[in-house]
Length: 127
Image 1 (cartoon, rainbow, N blue to C red):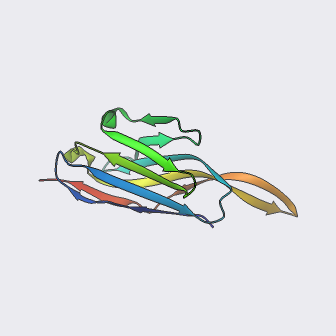
Image 2 (image 1 turned 180 degrees about the vertical axis):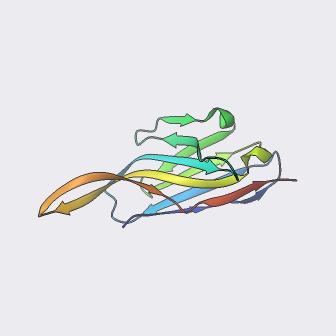
């Protein structure tokens, strides 16, 4: 079974920086997409940043220029660094990964991708 565990959330002053990490563990063949999402109180979960297995990245407009997503394929980790934190960044941040696992069904072994989410880590930006 695969698990995603986030770390690094907490309280940040406006204008400060934060660093979130997410480690995947379990029966992983390889990881395709790794992403960060966030959900503020009363709002829907929204995409923050994604890094593909080949290294291509994309960011939501609200973090462009002040966020950097990176991954360590050897450690199955993804990290999000943000600068110039704003009160609107206050949210629970979730790690997402599309992970390819080995499956055996009726004696036939195949590789199949599954979506996994972490449990979330709270980030609060306030003075």
